[in-house]
Image 1 (cartoon, helix red, strand yellow):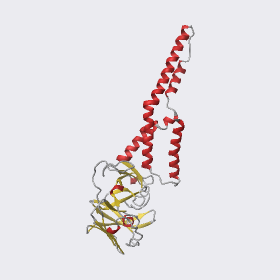
Image 2 (cartoon, helix red, strand yellow):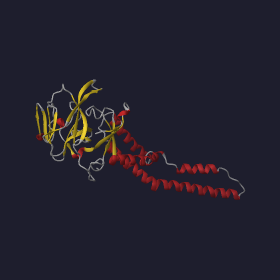
Image 3 (cartoon, rainbow, N blue to C red):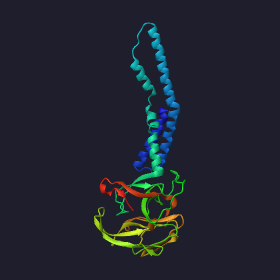
Image 4 (cartoon, rainbow, N blue to C red):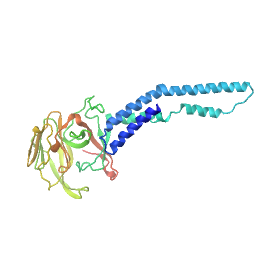
Length: 322
């Protein structure tokens, strides 16, 4: 078992190492699932096989030692070493290293797996596409049960939940590269007609209410951008616009359901197909979103982002957001 366990641990370490150096595209959900299964099997084996055998060995040792002591006492010899007997029993019962690194870790891994799979999952904001709502370095929590629970890895829905709504900030698997997670705001739900023309957003023919705000200084770009407050689905939030950027969507890919979109020099107009969502970043002129690569299938949605739990560069960022 020591050799087998060493091989299994080496495979896990090798996978993580190859992922870290970029040799492979890792899948953390799959890795955590496998770790839970493997350590769970070791935990069961420890509880019902290995631990009872070690306890039996310790009891056998204690019994034989006691008999030996009785024989010596009948011969008039007073034996010593009671402490050594207890020490040996403890060593016999103690978990070997290969069980300590498998069965011993199972409770912790199981808790992490359940929390991450069915309740909340942490993410780190890697880019400025969601300025000014979310900043680079924000550590956020994503609610994974609002839209219904899904089976880990397979992502199959197992419970009902409310449908995603316009204005929700969601984390989803990037359709062109599903192993990569993106975060954007829902602008259109199935059946909506979304138009972003001349940097003005309309949904089903109705302009989204917009209020001008003081310019926002983006530290990454070291410049000011025009800032506005929008209200979508009853959720007010701030957005940025770069007055120097063109409204023309350059470089849109040949995505699925592209026939539902119409591109022009003014921007883009799309009708959201059934089972899909149209998303955009709040930093409108610095966001790779549905305007460029298409719609987000419902099955790609990971959950709703709702809380910044840490930003090590700015503790004032901690809190909820729209």
